Length: 155
Image 1 (spheres, rainbow, N blue to C red):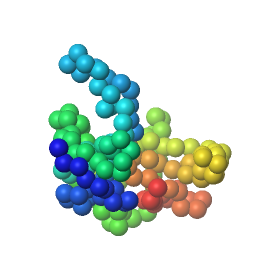
Image 2: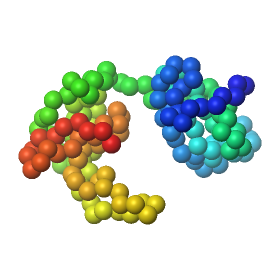
Image 3: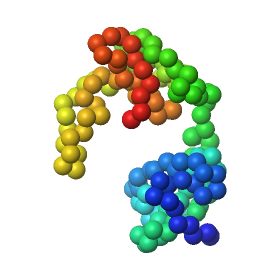
């Protein structure tokens, strides 16, 4: 058991990669016992195969190995292109509202524009315009002005 103080940016202390945040889930039963640790949020390092959970809201985090199923599930199937190598391109959705992701090659979903939502008292403008979102490589492609061309965009 190693206790670590994570930086405010939440970088992995071992490899320096960005930690992925995962909300806590429902209570689970493992080996006939109630496992309450699944209700706590995790900071996951996919490179190292470990995750961190905060100890009693102290700001210190305990390190745990990532279960084998989660490690194998999160590995990318295809090689990801660098975001700087992705040129603006025409993207068209199919009948299911999906399109092939130019970055990873998996299917991404089309998200139609929605009205502005208020989140924590602030306007959330993220889903106001039509865009494509890839759940596999976490990429977002936004429309360029009124054309059929889409460009990779930060969230």
